[in-house]
Image 1 (cartoon, rainbow, N blue to C red):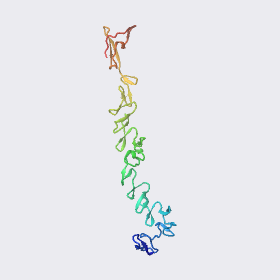
Image 2: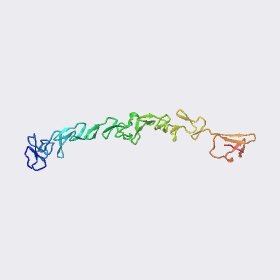
Image 3: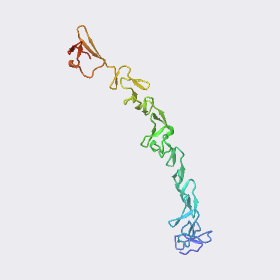
Image 4: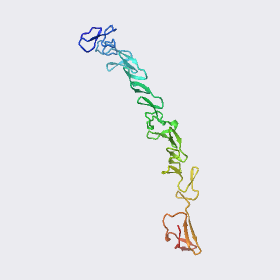
Length: 276
């Protein structure tokens, strides 16, 4: 290789040299007048020697001058990152500031209530207070101000007594402890009401009458938690024929041995006739 001090070697042929232009001390590359191998080196004793002093906004890392955080290498100098970029390479951002998303060499900021996806800011689910995706399971926090809460598995759902009604939580009917889809589609009932799974309705147990928020046994008596008006009636006609009747069908057939009646002090063990 044979190039003058005012020339730099292009690296093609033995004597392939180009002028340095305005570099009064010569050059080793076309972009600038730096004579050190490390372009960001301010002072070196020879071309391949370790750098003694790095240029402004740069520092030595593993023996090489590199731009400080917040700056990027712009040819032979370090320029300040802009457009909310924390780290650059040439004219492309490699790392954005906190709160910004990297996309095609630039930084995008998504406002509160949105998330970044494929270069766009999309709306979070209404149940979220900040999110990383579109579902209620992608929430950073639940939107407590709008009555959403964590169900314990990472999903944001309406609080007890409310149901998801589009973007808001609306009250269930007074009979429902929980509901889904509409106020009267109960999934759990307020005590003492019970759920009919075939209709998703809450009502009192058979025999009880709902009065306000209670279940009353108004037409019978409570036996073992059941309200019943079951009764029996025994009559005797002029021929001393005993007739036993019931208000409802009995659970099993009756026989003569099923009933023992007494009249005054004498036991009557024979039942002439009974009705069910």
